[in-house]
Amino acid sequence: MTGSFGPGPLPESADVVVIGGGVVGCAIARELSRFDVSAVLIERSPDVATGTSKANSGILHAGFDAEPGTWKARLNVRGSRLYAELAEGLGIPRKATGSLVVAKDTAEMETVAELRHRGIDNGVAGLEIWNRDQVVAHEPNISSDIAGALWAPTGAIVCPFLATVGFAENAIRNGVRIVIECAVTGIDVADRQIVGVRTTRGRVATRFVVNAAGLHSDEVARLAGDDSFTIKPRRGEYILFDRSVGQLVNTVLFPTPDKVSKGILVSPTVHGNVFIGPDAVDIDDPEDRETTAGGLAGIIAGARRIVPALPLGTAITEFAGLRAAAGKDFVIGPSPAARGLVHAAGIQSPGLTSAPAIGEVIVEMLQDVGLRLRAKASFVPVNPEKPRFHELDREAQARLVARDPLFGRVICRCETVTEAEIVAAIRSPCGARTVDGVKRRVRAGAGRCQGGFCGPRVTAILARELDVPITAVRKDSIKSWLFLSRADLEAGEGIHA
Image (tube, rainbow, N blue to C red; front, side):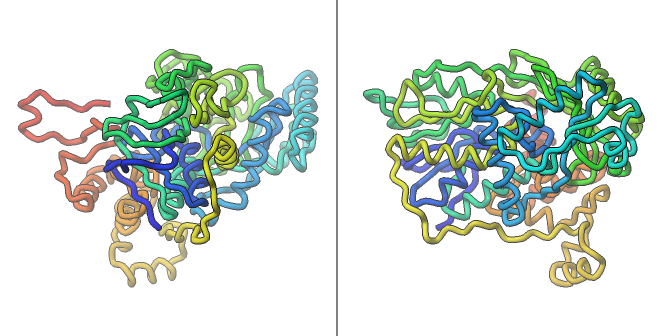
């Protein structure tokens, strides 16, 4: 049984409705697809991974930071282990880099020791206290005035976009329907029991709803009469450097954390870049992703405490992401106001790491509140392998070109992305429908020129493959058209965020 992905239609009914197409919602959908239930995931944007999941650090935390006994502690460690098992089969790029929490003085070394004890309590394996010489041997570009560090060998990095897409695609292959460009407008409750969800694409009857709506999860909860938590957006800014300086650091470098944040870090990415950030600023607007001169200056100063010789001249982009903060811990559990509503909300760091474990817990909770689950004999746990042209040797590349000439057409020169890969990204079960959707899946436009060369060509390929006019192709969000017709201009239309 295969599901579907697109802007509609909604089914008349479903056993479970998942609201939110970020990494948490998609991981929950994938876990549900293991069972003989009908499930539909609703996402208001034209793609999955358009919120917090598209703008975060891409780090799989080891699990030493969270307070023992919390959801964060339990699900971080479990999620880290699940990624190690699932990543390859789901096509999720993952690299086991380990991580270091760097201390500058005796007081910070005491904090590092406390983190080690906390990590041991949380079940994190292999934690060690390193002295200065050990750290410098591992990270030659690190600041000379460090005192030591906590080494966590189970720390890793991952591509957050492809993690989300990997979970979503596997869910679709196993029967889940994902409906995009579909905003929730109401939740129907009768006698304190969920009975349906109203959307901009109609109503779906259901008795079970998972609220994984990220920055808007408190709004979704209130639609069911539940005001038990409030989301506070927390913005973090980043600077991304070109792959030419990818050897600046070998592992994820954290400063010693404070009470608000893990601090400004310096980290490699799975694609060979390096980034610095994020800061942590509480804001009111859940759509405010602007970068600021003060914020960028602050993360540069913070990163230089760890790696003084930052190659600022090789920065290729700056961006900001938002985390959905709702207190010190995740908000996970049945709603106190409506039976059948289960929250997966307030999922800030380490939410990416915890996502597959959150999926397990939420499905267990759905069963506890009455969802009947029977394992699906036909469940397929992996996605078909997708070749990444730039990673192959010349002989393997030649074989691909012989099989499909579109592999011989390089569209994105910075990242060596071929037309065949772009077409496959559009035609896949969770296929790209926007320029940024292509970028997130195959990195066309993610390199040094940030789409300056390949952007128009990607737009043309999208128009051809989706069978729409150029003026209907969007950058990312619902109204983010890149080209306007004469009629649009005469009507006063413009580009909208």
